[in-house]
Amino acid sequence: ESVLESLQAHDIGLEGLPWRILRPARDNDVDVKCARAERNMRLARREITETGHSPTLINCLAEAAQTLGECEQAIALYRQCLDADQATSTERLEAYYGLLTCLNGTEDARDNQLALCVEALEQFPLDAQLLCAMGGYLQSAGRIDLAIRSYETAYQFGRVNPLTWHLDEITQIAAVCLSNALQAQDADDKALHVLQSAIEQHGKCPRLCRALLDLHVKYGRVDAALQQVKYLEIDDHEQPIMETAIVGAACVGRRDWESAESQLQQAF
Image (tube, rainbow, N blue to C red; front, side, top):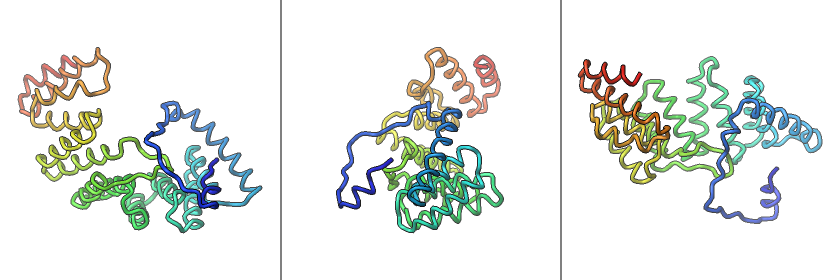
Protein backbone atom coordinates (compact mmCIF):
# COMPACT_ATOMS: atom_id res chain seq x y z
CA GLU A 1 0.00 0.00 0.00
CA SER A 2 1.44 3.35 -1.03
CA VAL A 3 0.23 6.90 -1.70
CA LEU A 4 3.22 7.70 -3.91
CA GLU A 5 1.48 7.16 -7.26
CA SER A 6 -1.38 9.47 -6.27
CA LEU A 7 1.03 12.13 -5.00
CA GLN A 8 3.08 12.01 -8.19
CA ALA A 9 -0.05 12.14 -10.34
CA HIS A 10 -1.07 15.39 -8.66
CA ASP A 11 2.46 16.89 -8.52
CA ILE A 12 2.50 16.83 -4.73
CA GLY A 13 6.05 16.91 -3.40
CA LEU A 14 7.60 15.04 -0.52
CA GLU A 15 9.99 16.10 2.20
CA GLY A 16 11.87 13.74 4.48
CA LEU A 17 11.76 13.71 8.27
CA PRO A 18 14.82 13.21 10.49
CA TRP A 19 13.64 9.77 11.63
CA ARG A 20 14.45 6.22 10.64
CA ILE A 21 12.15 3.20 10.62
CA LEU A 22 13.97 0.09 11.84
CA ARG A 23 12.70 -3.41 11.20
CA PRO A 24 12.35 -5.43 14.43
CA ALA A 25 14.14 -8.74 15.00
CA ARG A 26 10.79 -10.50 14.55
CA ASP A 27 10.94 -9.66 10.85
CA ASN A 28 13.85 -12.10 10.52
CA ASP A 29 11.88 -15.01 12.01
CA VAL A 30 11.53 -17.66 9.30
CA ASP A 31 7.93 -18.52 10.14
CA VAL A 32 6.91 -14.85 10.16
CA LYS A 33 8.67 -14.20 6.85
CA CYS A 34 7.08 -17.21 5.15
CA ALA A 35 3.58 -16.40 6.43
CA ARG A 36 3.97 -12.81 5.25
CA ALA A 37 5.29 -13.95 1.87
CA GLU A 38 2.31 -16.28 1.32
CA ARG A 39 -0.08 -13.47 2.26
CA ASN A 40 1.67 -10.97 -0.03
CA MET A 41 1.69 -13.40 -2.94
CA ARG A 42 -2.03 -14.04 -2.53
CA LEU A 43 -2.86 -10.31 -2.35
CA ALA A 44 -0.55 -9.36 -5.23
CA ARG A 45 -2.08 -11.99 -7.52
CA ARG A 46 -5.57 -10.74 -6.65
CA GLU A 47 -4.58 -7.15 -7.38
CA ILE A 48 -2.93 -8.14 -10.68
CA THR A 49 -6.19 -9.84 -11.68
CA GLU A 50 -8.12 -6.65 -10.88
CA THR A 51 -5.74 -3.94 -12.10
CA GLY A 52 -3.08 -5.62 -14.26
CA HIS A 53 0.67 -6.02 -13.88
CA SER A 54 2.88 -3.25 -12.51
CA PRO A 55 6.57 -3.19 -11.45
CA THR A 56 5.53 -2.88 -7.79
CA LEU A 57 3.30 -5.97 -7.91
CA ILE A 58 5.85 -7.99 -9.90
CA ASN A 59 8.50 -7.16 -7.30
CA CYS A 60 6.10 -8.16 -4.55
CA LEU A 61 5.60 -11.57 -6.17
CA ALA A 62 9.36 -11.94 -6.73
CA GLU A 63 10.26 -11.13 -3.13
CA ALA A 64 7.61 -13.54 -1.85
CA ALA A 65 8.88 -16.32 -4.13
CA GLN A 66 12.45 -15.63 -2.99
CA THR A 67 11.44 -15.87 0.68
CA LEU A 68 9.65 -19.17 0.02
CA GLY A 69 12.76 -20.63 -1.64
CA GLU A 70 11.38 -20.53 -5.19
CA CYS A 71 14.51 -18.89 -6.59
CA GLU A 72 14.00 -19.70 -10.28
CA GLN A 73 10.56 -18.12 -10.19
CA ALA A 74 11.93 -15.13 -8.27
CA ILE A 75 14.72 -14.61 -10.82
CA ALA A 76 12.23 -14.69 -13.68
CA LEU A 77 9.97 -12.18 -11.91
CA TYR A 78 12.77 -9.77 -11.04
CA ARG A 79 13.90 -9.86 -14.68
CA GLN A 80 10.30 -9.23 -15.74
CA CYS A 81 10.25 -6.15 -13.50
CA LEU A 82 13.49 -4.86 -15.05
CA ASP A 83 12.04 -5.35 -18.53
CA ALA A 84 8.77 -3.65 -17.58
CA ASP A 85 10.22 -0.64 -15.74
CA GLN A 86 12.90 1.22 -17.68
CA ALA A 87 13.00 4.31 -15.43
CA THR A 88 15.56 4.70 -12.63
CA SER A 89 12.82 4.04 -10.10
CA THR A 90 12.74 2.56 -6.62
CA GLU A 91 11.08 -0.55 -8.06
CA ARG A 92 13.93 -1.03 -10.52
CA LEU A 93 16.53 -0.66 -7.77
CA GLU A 94 14.67 -3.20 -5.62
CA ALA A 95 14.61 -5.62 -8.56
CA TYR A 96 18.38 -5.34 -8.89
CA TYR A 97 18.83 -5.96 -5.16
CA GLY A 98 16.61 -9.03 -5.26
CA LEU A 99 18.09 -10.46 -8.45
CA LEU A 100 21.68 -10.10 -7.24
CA THR A 101 20.78 -12.00 -4.07
CA CYS A 102 18.87 -14.70 -5.96
CA LEU A 103 21.87 -15.40 -8.20
CA ASN A 104 23.89 -16.65 -5.20
CA GLY A 105 24.62 -20.33 -5.69
CA THR A 106 23.54 -20.42 -9.35
CA GLU A 107 25.82 -21.46 -12.21
CA ASP A 108 28.43 -18.79 -13.07
CA ALA A 109 27.02 -16.74 -10.20
CA ARG A 110 29.96 -14.37 -9.76
CA ASP A 111 30.30 -13.54 -13.46
CA ASN A 112 26.57 -12.95 -13.77
CA GLN A 113 26.47 -10.88 -10.57
CA LEU A 114 29.40 -8.75 -11.73
CA ALA A 115 27.74 -8.03 -15.07
CA LEU A 116 24.39 -7.28 -13.44
CA CYS A 117 25.98 -5.04 -10.80
CA VAL A 118 27.78 -3.04 -13.50
CA GLU A 119 24.44 -2.59 -15.27
CA ALA A 120 22.77 -1.49 -12.04
CA LEU A 121 25.55 0.96 -11.14
CA GLU A 122 25.26 2.61 -14.56
CA GLN A 123 21.77 3.63 -13.49
CA PHE A 124 22.35 4.07 -9.73
CA PRO A 125 26.05 5.05 -9.64
CA LEU A 126 26.29 6.07 -5.99
CA ASP A 127 23.99 3.49 -4.39
CA ALA A 128 25.88 2.34 -1.30
CA GLN A 129 24.52 -1.21 -1.28
CA LEU A 130 25.33 -1.80 -4.95
CA LEU A 131 28.85 -0.42 -4.47
CA CYS A 132 29.47 -2.71 -1.47
CA ALA A 133 28.12 -5.67 -3.42
CA MET A 134 30.38 -4.82 -6.36
CA GLY A 135 33.35 -4.63 -3.99
CA GLY A 136 32.55 -8.11 -2.70
CA TYR A 137 32.24 -9.59 -6.19
CA LEU A 138 35.52 -7.99 -7.29
CA GLN A 139 37.32 -9.13 -4.14
CA SER A 140 36.16 -12.72 -4.64
CA ALA A 141 37.44 -12.49 -8.23
CA GLY A 142 40.89 -11.47 -6.96
CA ARG A 143 40.66 -7.82 -8.07
CA ILE A 144 41.45 -6.29 -4.70
CA ASP A 145 42.53 -3.00 -6.31
CA LEU A 146 39.13 -2.47 -7.92
CA ALA A 147 37.32 -3.75 -4.82
CA ILE A 148 39.08 -1.06 -2.76
CA ARG A 149 37.89 1.62 -5.19
CA SER A 150 34.31 0.35 -4.95
CA TYR A 151 34.31 0.18 -1.13
CA GLU A 152 35.98 3.61 -0.92
CA THR A 153 33.32 5.16 -3.15
CA ALA A 154 30.59 3.54 -1.04
CA TYR A 155 32.19 4.83 2.17
CA GLN A 156 32.87 8.38 1.01
CA PHE A 157 30.00 9.09 -1.38
CA GLY A 158 27.48 6.24 -1.05
CA ARG A 159 23.78 7.04 -0.78
CA VAL A 160 20.66 5.12 0.14
CA ASN A 161 17.18 5.36 -1.32
CA PRO A 162 14.92 6.19 1.66
CA LEU A 163 11.89 4.74 -0.15
CA THR A 164 13.17 1.17 0.06
CA TRP A 165 14.56 -1.04 2.83
CA HIS A 166 18.33 -1.03 3.07
CA LEU A 167 21.01 -2.33 5.41
CA ASP A 168 21.37 -0.41 8.61
CA GLU A 169 24.83 1.15 9.09
CA ILE A 170 25.69 0.67 5.40
CA THR A 171 28.37 3.40 5.64
CA GLN A 172 30.03 1.61 8.56
CA ILE A 173 29.81 -1.68 6.65
CA ALA A 174 31.58 -0.02 3.71
CA ALA A 175 34.31 1.25 6.07
CA VAL A 176 34.92 -2.24 7.50
CA CYS A 177 34.98 -3.80 4.02
CA LEU A 178 37.43 -1.13 2.84
CA SER A 179 39.65 -1.75 5.87
CA ASN A 180 39.66 -5.52 5.26
CA ALA A 181 40.46 -5.07 1.56
CA LEU A 182 43.34 -2.73 2.41
CA GLN A 183 44.70 -5.32 4.83
CA ALA A 184 44.57 -7.89 2.01
CA GLN A 185 46.99 -5.58 0.17
CA ASP A 186 49.20 -5.26 3.27
CA ALA A 187 48.19 -1.61 3.64
CA ASP A 188 47.45 -1.97 7.34
CA ASP A 189 48.29 1.64 8.23
CA LYS A 190 45.67 2.86 5.75
CA ALA A 191 43.21 0.27 7.09
CA LEU A 192 43.75 1.58 10.62
CA HIS A 193 43.24 5.17 9.46
CA VAL A 194 39.94 4.25 7.76
CA LEU A 195 38.55 2.65 10.93
CA GLN A 196 39.71 5.45 13.21
CA SER A 197 38.22 8.09 10.88
CA ALA A 198 34.94 6.17 10.66
CA ILE A 199 34.70 5.98 14.45
CA GLU A 200 35.36 9.71 14.74
CA GLN A 201 32.60 10.38 12.23
CA HIS A 202 29.97 7.79 13.20
CA GLY A 203 30.73 7.07 16.84
CA LYS A 204 31.88 3.93 18.59
CA CYS A 205 29.40 1.51 17.06
CA PRO A 206 30.08 -2.21 17.75
CA ARG A 207 30.74 -3.04 14.08
CA LEU A 208 33.58 -0.52 13.76
CA CYS A 209 35.01 -1.22 17.21
CA ARG A 210 35.12 -4.96 16.55
CA ALA A 211 37.00 -4.38 13.29
CA LEU A 212 39.46 -2.08 15.06
CA LEU A 213 39.85 -4.65 17.85
CA ASP A 214 40.73 -7.34 15.30
CA LEU A 215 43.34 -5.10 13.68
CA HIS A 216 44.98 -4.35 17.04
CA VAL A 217 44.99 -8.06 17.91
CA LYS A 218 46.70 -8.82 14.60
CA TYR A 219 49.73 -6.80 15.77
CA GLY A 220 49.62 -7.86 19.40
CA ARG A 221 48.49 -4.47 20.72
CA VAL A 222 46.75 -5.80 23.83
CA ASP A 223 45.86 -2.54 25.59
CA ALA A 224 44.49 -0.92 22.43
CA ALA A 225 42.41 -4.03 21.67
CA LEU A 226 41.01 -4.22 25.20
CA GLN A 227 39.88 -0.60 24.98
CA GLN A 228 37.33 -1.64 22.32
CA VAL A 229 35.66 -4.39 24.37
CA LYS A 230 33.39 -2.02 26.26
CA TYR A 231 31.81 -0.89 22.99
CA LEU A 232 30.85 -4.41 21.89
CA GLU A 233 27.34 -5.73 22.41
CA ILE A 234 28.18 -8.58 24.78
CA ASP A 235 26.81 -9.58 28.17
CA ASP A 236 28.67 -8.41 31.26
CA HIS A 237 29.48 -11.97 32.34
CA GLU A 238 31.08 -12.65 28.93
CA GLN A 239 33.36 -9.61 29.03
CA PRO A 240 36.14 -11.21 31.15
CA ILE A 241 36.13 -14.24 28.83
CA MET A 242 36.40 -11.97 25.79
CA GLU A 243 39.28 -10.06 27.39
CA THR A 244 41.16 -13.27 28.11
CA ALA A 245 40.64 -14.45 24.55
CA ILE A 246 41.89 -11.10 23.22
CA VAL A 247 45.06 -11.33 25.31
CA GLY A 248 45.65 -14.84 23.98
CA ALA A 249 45.00 -13.84 20.38
CA ALA A 250 47.33 -10.84 20.73
CA CYS A 251 50.03 -13.21 21.99
CA VAL A 252 49.59 -15.14 18.76
CA GLY A 253 50.15 -11.86 16.89
CA ARG A 254 53.45 -11.50 18.79
CA ARG A 255 54.25 -15.20 18.18
CA ASP A 256 54.36 -15.83 21.93
CA TRP A 257 52.91 -19.32 21.61
CA GLU A 258 53.21 -20.45 25.22
CA SER A 259 51.36 -17.45 26.65
CA ALA A 260 48.82 -17.62 23.84
CA GLU A 261 47.99 -21.25 24.56
CA SER A 262 47.56 -20.57 28.28
CA GLN A 263 45.23 -17.60 27.77
CA LEU A 264 43.17 -19.19 24.99
CA GLN A 265 42.80 -22.44 26.91
CA GLN A 266 41.54 -20.47 29.92
CA ALA A 267 39.01 -18.58 27.74
CA PHE A 268 37.91 -21.84 26.12
